[in-house]
Length: 415
Image (tube, rainbow, N blue to C red; front, side, top):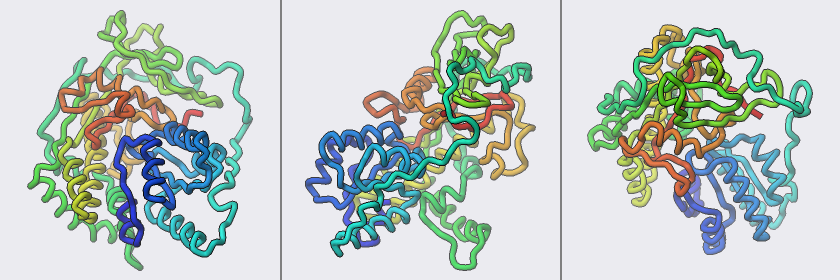
C-alpha cells in the first residue's frame, strides 16, 4: 500500500513488521501523521488489532484516522466490531486503491475544514444470522453430522522428513495468478480485456521475474512435514508419539461452532476412545530469507516497482509451495485421485480432506504455530517461531498447515 500512496503524492513512513503500538503512535506524533495504517496479513492478528485500538483509547487518542487491511481482516469485523472499540475514524481497506480513496477524502475534508462526523465512525450493523441467535447452553463434544465410519488412510511413514531442491517451475505451476497479479502486483485489466487476456498479458512479466529470482538465488524452497497418529478429544486434537497412543506429544484446542452443525476441526479425526487409529499430517513450507532481504534492499533504495514485484512473488510462491506440497501429500497418502480436474478447482478445495492454517476462524490461535514448529523440527529448514515474534514464522515467506484426510474436512467459520 505504501507504494501506491507514495506514487500518488503521499509521504509514507513504513515502520516495517513486528511494530508495537507504542512505536506506531510515537512515529505518528513525530511526523504529525494524518492517519496510521496496520496490516493483518502476516504480522498482526485480528486480536492484536483490537488490542492496539483499545490501547489508543486508553491513551486518549480517539480522533486519529486508522486504516486496517490484510487477509486476516474482513470488512464486517472492522466496520461492525472494531468501530465499537475505537470511536475515531476507522476504515477497512480491501486493497491499496481503496486505502488511497479513503485518504484522498480525508485530506480533502481536512483542507476544506469540513468534517463529516459520521465518516468512518458509525458501526455498521452486523447481518442477522439465520436461525436462532442464542448460544446453546451445552455444546456437543462432537458434531453429530461428521461421520466416524469413513475409511482411514494410513500414511506412507510416521515421523518427519525434510525436503529441499524442489524445482521452481514445479512450484510456479501452482501459483494463484489472480492473487499475484491483482492483489500483490496491483495490476488491473485494461478496458475491454477479459480475465484470460489479462493473465496472458502478465505471464511474460511473471516469467521474467522468475528468471531474475532464479539467477539471483532469491527463492530457496524447503519443506518439513510429517504424519502422526491422532485422536479427537472433544474440541482438542491429540497427537501421539506412536500408534500405541500411550504418549501424548502435543494437543491443539480448536473452537466449536455455537450453532448447527457444531463443527470443530477435532471432529475430523476418530474419537480418542475409538479402537481404530487415525492420522494427521502437518507441513511447514518456506521460500527462505533471501527474497525478504532483497525486497527490503529494493525498498530502501526507492526501487518501489522492483520491490513490489519481488515481495509479491515471494509471498505467492510460498502459497504455491503450500498448494504444491499439499498435492504431493495427497498423492503419497493415497487419495489424490479424488482431486478436481483443474488448478482453479484446487484453489476452491476440490480435493479430499482439508488444509487448515492458523490465524483463521476455525483455528485462530497463532501460538499453535510454535507447537507445529517444535513438532516438525522447523529449525532444520531455518524457520523460527516464538512469542517474541508474535507467533509469526520467520523467514516471512513461510506458512504451515494441518492436513486432514476426512472427506467432510472443508473450510468453515467457527463462531
